Figure 1 (cartoon, rainbow, N blue to C red):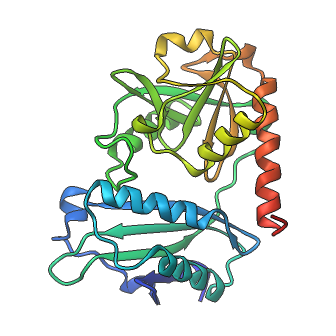
Figure 2 (cartoon, one colour):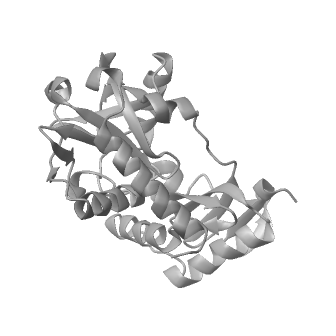
Length: 278
């Protein structure tokens, strides 16, 4: 079978056609479920335990029981990648509540890898703002309607990402976390207002180790003209420069030195871990 045909259902490998969710499952009626997206490169899953720990935090936030320990689920993921001979892939993990026919279930599936044009890293990406916020900021739930609408607006306007604008300002991207350089400091919304991304956490530690001053607060839309630099972080993007928001250039439309420094620092961490030298 091709990699995409394998689905892990609570650790049992099944054909994708057998992976079904009942219409009475609260995941369908109330979005009662959580998920994670991971990167598989050279057959290795990047930061698997970090992602599973965040999955567990999201599950606890909505009182969603998980069917196994994190260690067991890690073995499920590794077996799926091994059996499918997946070298370059996106691993999606979805945890759902029980329904009349099944108990709590964790599905794992392998999707095509996500690649972005080199130009986005050389010259920067664009984004548009979208008014909306997720109901539970720290939980990565399957309730992604506002994220979908923000991405749809971005696509319609030819932008790369949609930035979610809550009552206190920009908190995150539809599928990313956001950082801005303001008055020389690196500013990003605090953990209690966002999904604290695994890539974001690595970048924060790298920034601290490199002596950058960090400020944790939302980013008002009115502050955009004062951004000296900005970038997005996510599982698939790693660190991606952001050089235009709502058709307004940041840093004259050029990638700034702080962004380039953290792009390179993250790339080194990623390569070292994927190649097994750490």
